[in-house]
Image 1 (spheres, rainbow over the protein chains, first blue to last red):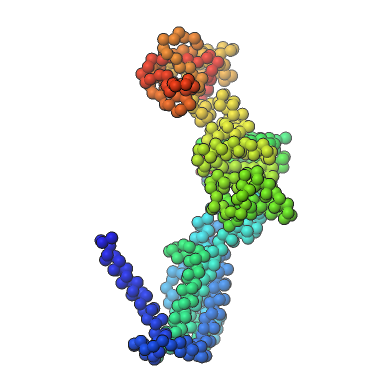
Image 2: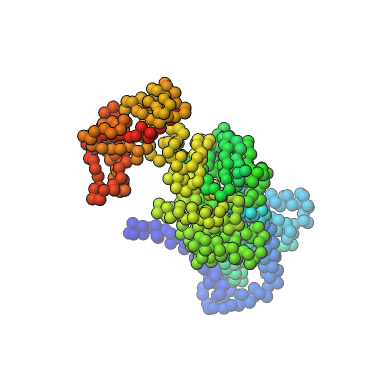
Length: 258
Length: 361
Ligand SMILES: Nc1ncnc2c1ncn2[C@@H]1O[C@H](COP(=O)(O)OP(=O)(O)OP(=O)(O)O)[C@@H](O)[C@H]1O
Ligand SMILES: [Mg+2]
């Protein structure tokens, strides 16, 4: 298609703009130089430094702990919310569940901060408050995915189960749950990735003591973008990509807008 | 006592009475059909029997026991859905085993009966396939097998053949009849295809706007429709406005629009001066060259205005001298003859005095 060459050029430019910086970060994480300026030689040294960095390991542990707990809770609650929204078509629930998804993160961060401080005091800010904050915004994503999965399903499947002798609980366990499982898993992975690389909301709700990976990276680049930052960013990128790949595999259509 | 008794059942959606004061009995072992145009309330009635909807008024009894308040899973009634509703995450065998599992049958009994039922519907080799790997006709059979495997008292079928093509449909019709006879389960079958209803059923209830218009055996529904709606809906028929001139004991004298005087069989509802319609099936109308001497009392001349060659028969539309359009059916049984008359030919249409019927408004 000759007429479309400029479309191709445009697309390539946009993707280059998106991905070249990422590629540079990955490349420099293997660069045998303290400066992100020119290629000197291949090394795994920065990954070794990373593994020896106490603060970094603590931050990584916190991030994983928060992501696992928050995504697990958000998955259970979000699935329930998604089913409820599909089954009973409530008026208010969708707003309550979906608002945190649409609201600017900074707003959510500030309001959660104000809430935690006024309700429980300054010293309440901790891992727990971060987990609670992450649950609120992850839940909505899970609910959307589960609901759209249910919406695409033939309603008579659930009636057929009842008709053939299944109680409502058996219908849920043997028919509904297996059918929405890809959606639930995709939602869980989505929640996990959203949680593990969240910065803004974590920043507001973590108080002084708690550091997560994104916060740790931020405090390091305030000084300079070291190759160590490149290395940890690369690892984070890898985890995120893996999660998205698994999610899109388990539930094709998850990556489509909804 | 009938197996299923429906007593004055009504179901409303807002102002609309989807099912209105319906009463009917279905006997043990019967193949009973609910027939009617789209939107007449067939599915709604079926859903009330299955337990997915509750009647606003009236009662539904199975084996003499009122079903009100019994949830779907506790009714010995299974449904074959139009969309088949096969569980996509289960194999064919698992789908068929589902009702047996829910009934808590022992494992070895389940596998034995699943095997038997698979044989019954000729799907022995498909046990371990998933529904998406099956053709429409095979899905249909799995849905049937799943509905029958636990021997319900009643099997409800909501337009189960609707999604099949004509050839497969005919095949499945024959198979349904055979299957029902073999397993002896009572069928309540829903369709809007009148030919299907006639072919399959022991009895038919014709529904319109939520009401039963007529309930009888297929041959009586076809041969003696109760009113214009039933006559028009079942098969093709000539319907002409008519007024009763004389109601004698054995026959009626009618004045039929576009024809003149017609002798028709006696009808209980007919009385001199009453208006209605004269109805006669195309296959009861004889079409002959106009030169032939009249042999029957009901004999009218006209011209062929058009004809439709269908293969086994040809349908002629004859416009009579008085302006009536009469459809007549002529079998193409004579070898080498595709057609007997041409458009514009002068012909006569005639029928016996005991054919046709007068229908009140
Ligand atoms: N849940 C509902 N809410 C409102 N109206 C309904 C509902 N279900 C059915 N109706 C109405 O009730 C009437 C009967 O519907 P029903 O589905 O029983 O028709 P049907 O005879 O099965 O038609 P079809 O042959 O098209 O399946 C229709 O006018 C329909 O619009
Ligand atoms: Mg219907």
